[in-house]
Image 1 (cartoon, one colour):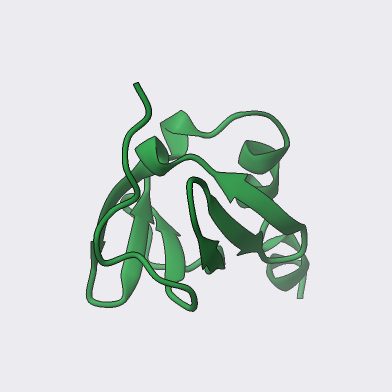
Image 2 (cartoon, one colour):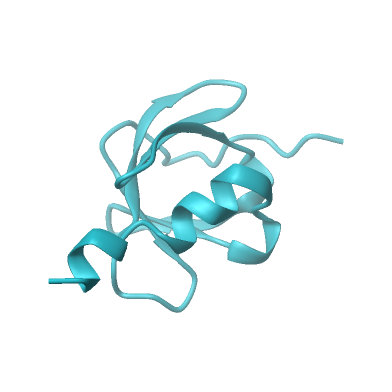
Length: 84
């Protein structure tokens, strides 16, 4: 069964891994899946069941529910910044 998209989810909200204070991207569009932009990696579809909650204009994501290229992109979203 597919989890529905959270009620307060909308384009423009920042994405955070659960437990992190640093955003890794933003919501681009909301539909049956959630289209997101990950810093330094581009656009991906995020399954609604990976979203823990939406509050204070933040989308909290469960990193354990990410896999493949999306998980890799999120883990490396700040690599360019961290090298400076």
